[in-house]
Length: 41
Image (tube, rainbow, N blue to C red; front, side, top):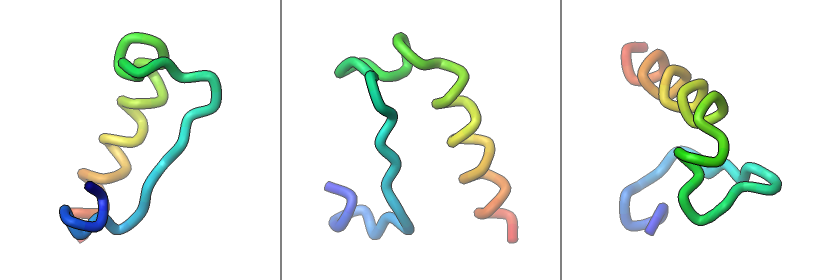
């Protein structure tokens, strides 16, 4: 899926459940913020 989306990278969060947004919301928010900042460059 990442390849099809032409992702610049992938992130694995150790200990995360299938619904990572619930099990690690702070980590997900940080990744989204980093991606948004990179998109603006």
